[in-house]
Length: 294
Ligand code: ADP
Image 1 (tube, rainbow, N blue to C red):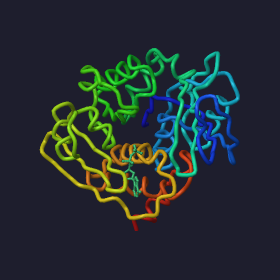
Image 2: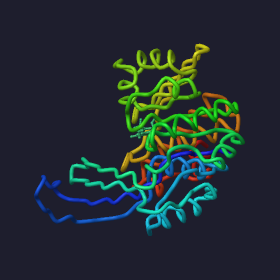
Image 3: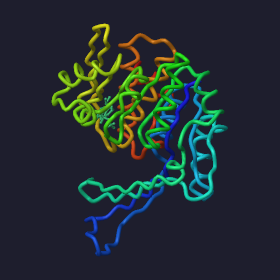
Image 4: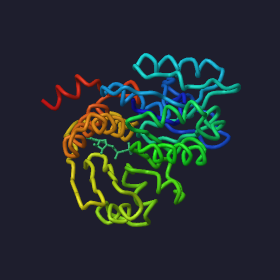
């Protein structure tokens, strides 16, 4: 079982010609609500890619919470560890203009009430084949979960987003760090993926820097280096490409695929997802990934 300890947000997306300035009201031309949050996205991506996945997190006692739970369950994600807490669910209020540029307000809501893994969470983590973490829960909770994984010998994958300083005790507990290029530069202070990868390997055993349409770069302390080319596709919406990549990578890892095959599997899953609009709705099934790999 792959455990994902992380955030669930409802994305509230308004499409406008031009984003409003402070104090201004504009009329938008489209609105939709989309279940998201990096934790939920990674859980759904891993389940669709063929993994057995448990989501550990919290939603509020509102309609968004019920919808998040149903969406995760429909994707085949085990939701026994998804708590309902009093108050609102986490939301991301997103404004997208005609150029595709966006501005986002995240209100953590229920996610922000998670001060640490519960006893049930700790038991689930200890029995997992992999643990996926991101930084949309309070840092103390992420650190405690990572340490629980490490102590139990469970591979711990961390997506260090949103970018922020990483405490040493978190880095010590992480097996595989999966930043995008910007996050890698923010963590290391080093520009350029090759140099940033060197710097990351001073901090963790294994790292994958995702490079958008340029693919990904993998390195491990044992000296292995791999450049994974991106699959050439017409990208429509790259939301959650990184989450799809990590979810599929964890599935491949759990199935003991070799590193090159695992990275190819993850890159194909992500490439399929960017060809469709949306986050959780855009993630490919195992069948689709295998068919595309040929
Ligand atoms: P994030 O979504 O976290 O910013 P990236 O943009 O680096 O992450 O994308 C993650 C992965 O998704 C990449 O490593 C690549 O495999 C795939 N990907 C992203 N954008 C494209 C694209 N335009 N074409 C093909 N693959 C893509």
